[in-house]
Image (cartoon, rainbow, N blue to C red; front, top):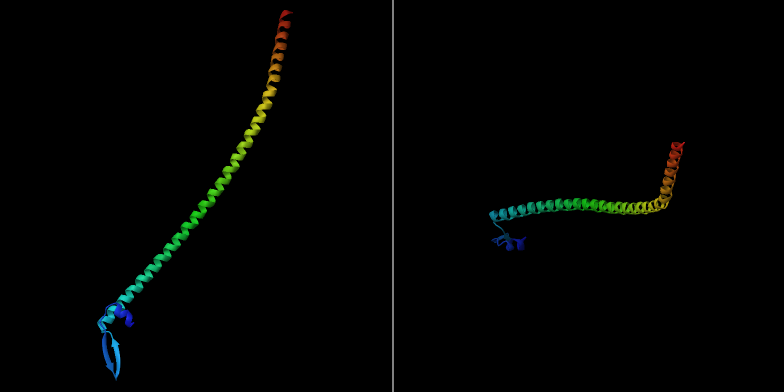
Length: 128
């Protein structure tokens, strides 16, 4: 404590008691030193509390960030699946359009043939 007190530039008092030399601190000075120490301890405790709260806040934010990362991964997977499904639907649609185009001439020919038969039957019935 002697070095600590000299670091605070506190006046030291030398005295002898029963032939032994002692170094002491006057009571008002000692009370100031103790008061400073108590204030420093309170300040250190408050700083430690603040640091602990900040650490818990950082952990909370990290948990939220991890949730967002997982959500983003999930959305990317869903997007990939949706794109794949869309591409498969387009392929199927193209295949069906080709089939429809191949059948359309036959259907048109059948409609024309049916129309001619109906017209011919109408003319035949009208001519009788």
